[in-house]
Length: 85
Image (cartoon, rainbow, N blue to C red; front, side, top):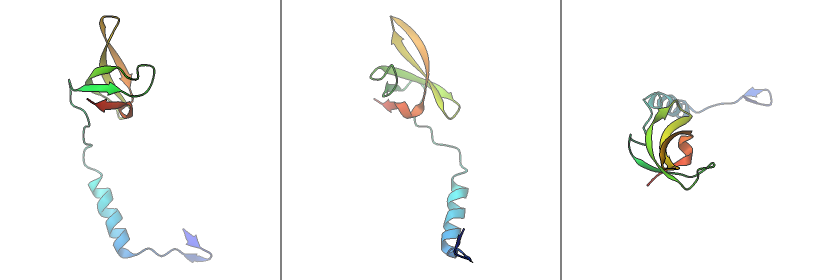
C-alpha cells in the first residue's frame, strides 16, 4: 500500500501485534454448542423451532434434530442460525 509515491509506513508495534494475533488464531476453534444441547433455530423455514444439537458438519453447517410430524428429523443448518436455550 502506498500514499502517492511513498510506501505506507507501519509501526513495528502494530506488526508485532498482528503477528501475535495471527499466531493465536491458529488454535483450534471454540465449539459454541455441545452434543445433545437444546438450541433454537432463528432463521430459515424452521425459525422458532427448538431442536437438539448433534454435531458440526464442517465450518458452515451443523446437524440439529427437530421434532417434525411426530418424528425426529435431522437438519443441516448454519451455526449462525442457532441460539442456546
